[in-house]
Image (cartoon, rainbow, N blue to C red; front, side, top):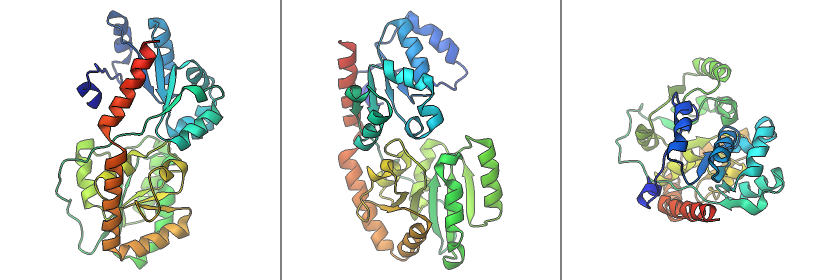
Amino acid sequence: MHLQQQGCQVSMIPLDGPELAKQLQQLPVSPPDLLHAFHAFHAGPVARRTATALNIPYLITLTGSDLFDPSLRDHPDTRQAIADAAAITCFDSLVAKLAAGSFPGSAQKIVVIPQGVEPFPESLPLPKPENSFIILLPAALRPVKGIDFAIHQLAPLATKLPGLQLWIVGGALDSRYEASIRTEAANCPWVKLLGETPYQSMGQQYVTADLVLNSSEFEGGMANVLLEAMIMAKPVLARDIPGNRSLILHGKTGWLFEDGDTLRQLILALAQQPDQREQVGRAAQRFVTEHYSPPQEALTLIKLYTKLTST
């Protein structure tokens, strides 16, 4: 939206959409000036082949799995797509440094462009039990999101915090992992699997939650769910990994945990400190508003697009 407001004509081509082949076939009729692939492994090879056929440049935005999943990072198609891309974008400098080390020869074309985020429309909270303490875990059901870790580590708190509830919001991307999580949840009445929620309805989830959790094993920069929670002034608790460190200043804009013991200690303390949760949530909102502006993201992208298409 913000790219379009700045005068860009943008067409989205979902790689998992039924019209992919047809959309790609139609591109030569009215060729774009460049292609922007989101995800080196899944989108990079298609962008590379298409850009070569159209004789236009392409760039790639790296994700966490591009860097931290060896089967994707080291795949020949990924490495070739990275090698031939006109530019590589990352969401923060920590990930950019990792990318430069993972893909030799890429350092000179890596550009850091922080994600922008906007608050959801004002929403009323969802109904919740009296005296409950709701931890929201927005994550697709796949191993890298560490949902099984969260359930196992929070289980000992179920008796210490009688009102504890873990709400897991997200669709299934791994059927075997989904089955495992469903089995775990069936044995834990305090765990609720809410399934995939339309983006426009996520505001209600954030408003209702007392705390937002990120238990991912890795992130390719700024986790969308953390940005969304922070812009909504919700306190966030996240695993201490590079992508999360770029957003969270421990005790100031959220909290970081290294292991299950620390996670449980923080939850027990924060459950008794609503004023502290609100204070840090407001600080997080100010921080994200100042540093992660969608219009600024769009302007930085346009500057890069202009450079790539004028050389």
